[in-house]
Amino acid sequence: MRLSTVKIAGRATWGVIEGDSFRDVGAVLASRYPDLKAAITAGFPGVKDAAASAAAIPLAEVEWLPVVPNPDKILCVGLNYETHRKETGRSEVENPTIFSRYANSQTGHLAPIVRPKVSTNLDFEGELAVIIGKPGRYIPRAEAMDHVAGYACYNDGSVRDFQYHTHQFTPGKNFPDTGAFGPWMMTPDELGPLDDLRLQTRLNGEVVQDATFAQMIFDIARQIEYCSTFTRLEAGDVIVSGTPGGVGAKRTPPLWMKPGDVVEIEISRLGILRNPVVEEAH
Image 1 (tube, rainbow, N blue to C red):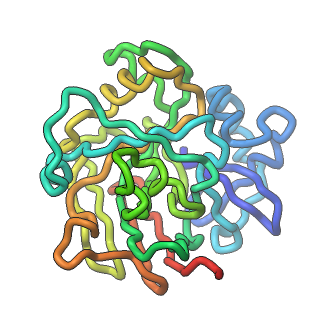
Image 2: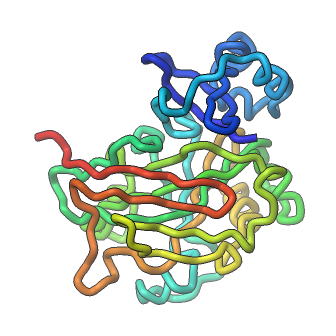
């Protein structure tokens, strides 16, 4: 299944994507699952049957929201491709580098990514988002993939000068409307194996990042194992699994996203996340 969270005529809801239509399952199952996170938590019972009878709305008429607007936490993995580690000059490490993003820093497909008025150093980071379906603590690597509800495209937009104020990444990763998440999540049974999938980031149509998930330093199972050691993973949590080399900050001259740009994250078989870039209102 492909599932998303949207607004229809100002009403937030969730549902299933079928072709060029959005099936408004949230309207049918509102008493059981008030949002997509609740459906993820339950494991999606009844969702396919509800989708068959739910109203079909053309995708052109929906306003896309972040796939999971209200996760308990968003854990981001840094320096998880060798190409990116090398371009940053960072040392090899034995464990994943983890930082956090807040839910209110996210935006949806086709919605603007906002360049804050305090910086012009807004960078792109195309990534695969992993949505947790089954909670757990100390999850063994061999069982980790059983805890995945689905996958989505993510742009971990970064305000680099604020990120580099100290050794802590948090400020540069949490400006409002910089983390794009969408358009939908796809369940593992539909997406299939990950390793051969290709991730591309395009800025104004030009490919600026290009990698396969087989190139990750720490695969998804290792990320889940590690993150569940220091925190309890909850259904609806999001792990943003790292970006490959090619980021704007490490180019000569630097390549920053600016108002008027359009940035796309495409993952083969999964979809395309597209966002215009705008200036924050002064």
